Every structure is written in C-alpha cells, then in structure tokens.
Image (cartoon, rainbow, N blue to C red; front, side, top):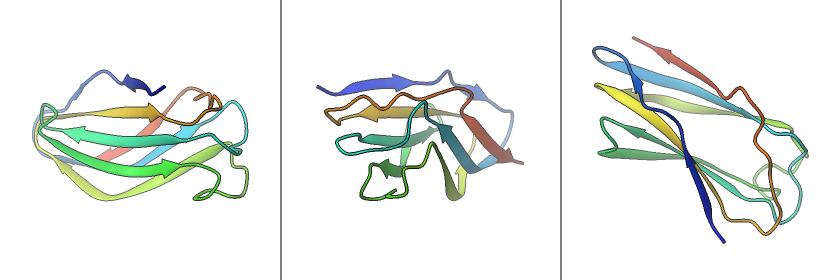
Length: 102
C-alpha cells in the first residue's frame, strides 16, 4: 500500500529557489524500499519529482540522501511530499534539511 506524508507549507515572501534537499534515514536503503520525493511550489500548482530513492538508484546502502534540485523556482511557498511504495519500511529520520536562497 502507498503511504504519503506532506510537510507544512513554507511561506517565504517573494521569489526563492530550493537548491538542495537532504533526507536522513533510520536504516540503510535496502531491497524493496522505495520512497519518491516531490517538491510542490506555489500552493501546490507546480510539482517537481526530485528522486526515486531505492536500492537500484542508491546502491551503496546510504543512510542519508542529498538531492540537488537545480534551483527550483518558487514564487510564494513550497512543501515536500514523501510517497512510500516499497514492500519494506524505509524510516525517514529527522530533520529533513532544505537549502533555499533568495
């Protein structure tokens, strides 16, 4: 079954870019663990798929993934969505770090 989590909306006055997102995990990425990371901007009107995290795309058993976003432009606000689809739990640890610039 698919599980979804969305962060609170970050409201930043004026235009800004999201440059990098780092997600830590409680365990190393292994077989049958899949997490799709999306960034939504401007009240959810625009979405960007940042990564599909699984042991095929990240084969080194990482416990933290940093995604470069190529300067995703936001005009008012943004939030992140995590969507789990694997058959084995991949536990996200905190904090999730977002690097943004004006």
